[in-house]
Length: 609
Image (cartoon, rainbow, N blue to C red):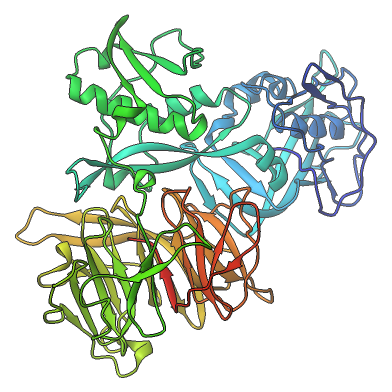
């Protein structure tokens, strides 16, 4: 539970004094608040700079019920590591039962409070308040974010101690509740890393690292929080398709409560005896998981040492991490690709204004087969092209002298809009495409881009697939799905059963990544856990923004606007610039400025993948 700092229907009560000393801010938990009357929002906390830590004040001895509730909600937005101050507002039994780490409910504004008398008098020994608001999201016990909607309505009950006469909370909802802006101040989204269970890199044969996003409290030792979260295993949604190299039961050594890198940017992680007798290769995989995870928080960490039983087991430096596992973020594309006015596949270095284009070697670039859409494999050695009418799919090499060959797939859809989508390659070298034929809509997989297509199972899918983009890790897929005229971005988990003669592939537990958007017109993966999306809210204007795969919005969510965007191109390598096509032509977005038009022209722009 907590307080918000902006917006909402709120009358501002009189605050107690707040002190800022040496970067510490004390939240006054003693604001005046009436015991009856209209709904009122909890007083907001001014937004603090990230280096400022916020701590709450304990309850006053003679604080009335409303002040106790106010102080408690304020305390939950502070940076108190163990919520020790918040617990002072509870009775001993309530404090013992309350588990704040089990969930966090995020509301659009801070929780509004209203006196709710359970039969006693205001001057009696018990009192209650209703906490209400509109849900935005929930964070579960695994620190996983899920968008939410609907009303929040819970009760906080207070009792007066017969000996001291002090009011304390003796019954309260499970977990924590706070407003959206307080959540954004208190929490940060970070990635922990595991390995794909059934996919390996087509280039190296190495395991594919998979980002598992979680939210941690930003100023409460996030390094140790992330290590503990990693050791506890993947979140529920991702667990079926990833593995961890840490032996079951691995934890920090007894007595280790805080971790920090040394002045050489090396982090030493002492583990219990579960990790004492593992092989060197397995230990290096564990170290890679730690290094990737820690670099999502602190990019300067460049070495991890694992110790167990008091002795060093292995260490891994950043330069060697790439020999242990492959990450999409490290896959830097050589070229940006687009289809030019002659419907040929063209490429150029992604240097921006001064870049010059050239036709891609081979039949897809010579114009003999006009193209509607193309996907270039992540190694950039082959490509899959859909013919201009959308009926046929070809896979061929991107070197000179190759032949086009026969199509690997054909659609029977009667119109262009009812035929093949733009295809997409995963990091394992498999090719994905959807056939939008209303008589037989299918999501299809061609292993290594060839052979008899596998029909991918899509339980729970409601609507027709318009766009397909597979993450480099091969375990997550982004789909733009049309249902009754509304186009939504959904993220699914790719499960593979390889026990039979042919694998059985399914996309499970589709979830929305853009719950606030009514129309999504273009999207692309723009990082290991981030996508760039073109869309609009109901009644709104088209906008370009970043979203996380879990449905949350990063702080750098909104980008300079464009109109009538037909494609957006991003790479898992965050240093690669964004490109887009619109009615204004082919554009790119240099860092820190607006969109700029290139001299080249094209109908669709894209990076490999």
